[in-house]
Amino acid sequence: MSGLSATLYTAGAALRAHQLGVQTAGANVANAATPGYSARQVILAANPQNGALSGVTVVSVSRKDEPFLRASSIRANVQNGYASARADLLSQMEGVLAPVDGSRVEHALESFFSSASALASDPSSVAARQTVLTQARAIAVAFNSTAADISALSSQVDARLSSATTHASDLARQLAELNQRVGSSAPSPDQPSSLLDERDRVAKELAGIVGGDVLTDKDGNVNIIALGTSIVAGKEALSLSTARNATSGKLDVVVTGYGKESAVVTARATQGEIGGLISVRDRDLMAQTNALDALAFDVQTAVNGVHQAGVGLDGASGRALFAGASSKAGAAAALRVDPTTAQSPRYVTAASSATTLPGDNRAALALAALYTQPAASSGTATFAEAERSRAGSVASAAQNANTDRDDAVAQSDLTASLLSSATGVSTDEEMIQLAQFQRAYQASAKVIATVNEMLDTLVKL
Image (tube, rainbow, N blue to C red; front, side):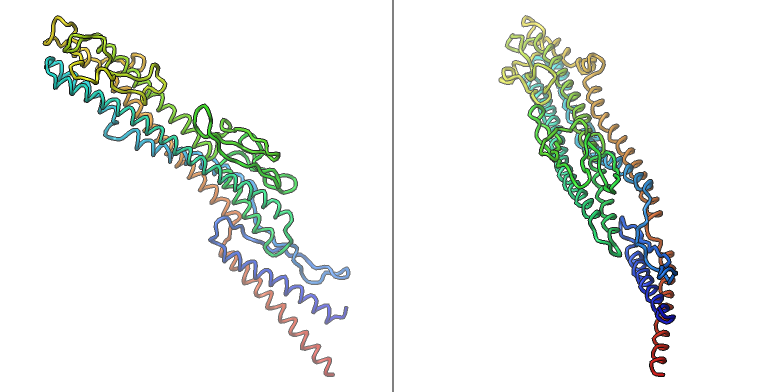
């Protein structure tokens, strides 16, 4: 190759390399604010030509990456998904089940026992007995409606669980497809970098929902190990769905394998958004159900014990004031005023003996005294204390969940910021790179123009 030809070749190679550098730096600046965008770097090397070095050539256009920081960011997002789901739901629970002015059950209990005290002051009054009957119905309604609220909250959790599971299944399929596309993409100035950015975004979002670990295999595929199985393995992905549990009536999380076999993995869902949802439904809401049922059963048992021992204005005894469940399970939803006693306020007892009617108030006094006795929680608390404890546990759980969520968000933001600092775009640095590539491009173009002039001169000689 002649001297001028070699010079022209060298300048041409440099022109192409620096043109790509200008394009890459410009793209970095344009995407400086794009979430998840990793800066691209043009890797240049000396260009060998016939055993000699002749200018530069582009080895590759790669993206910045920090595997350790990226893994830390994903782990923080997993915890954020779990903590945020719990905080959202428990805050909602607190508003419904633990109002600041006291629960419906607490107010109903106070009014009922106050009416019993009023009956003790006027035991011959039919109107006072009617008030007791009315307040007994109010207690039943308060327990029934609170149990219905808990059931409604559980249904809302199931609806959100179904949505999250469907979204996770879509993301798993996308991640498997991106593994395929990254492995088969033709080299280009921005490939597979843009696919890698998208794959990292999808993997992080998926891990935030299902939890688990994000691993890169020897072939460069990004895999998700969660729920006790490989949600994504290379170019294959499991399908996630929900199914109604025949026993509990709640939704289970189901994974369908590569051979279409299915397995229930609800018990394994302990991380990410799905884990947070299930923990609230099966732990916090279940605890509320158990506490409410226990209190309803205690009220039913204690009040009936006193009421059945007394006599009504008709001189009869043995009548229960409440009817409902025969055990604690389901007691709050089943509680109601006994149908027989509900027929007439005269059936409400105030006296302890038929021979002392109508002025005897000993049964009414015993009924009113239940309010201050440790008749709930296995004899360790009053009815009001047991109800405040139930409501207080919701408020405490919500407060703790909000603290955990704030910590998780702060950690997620910190790791994301560290990752962005390491792999994101520094506008100042890119502007310097852009200026350098532009000057090199202009110099290469000047060399080509000069060689062309020289060749024109030689031709004219």
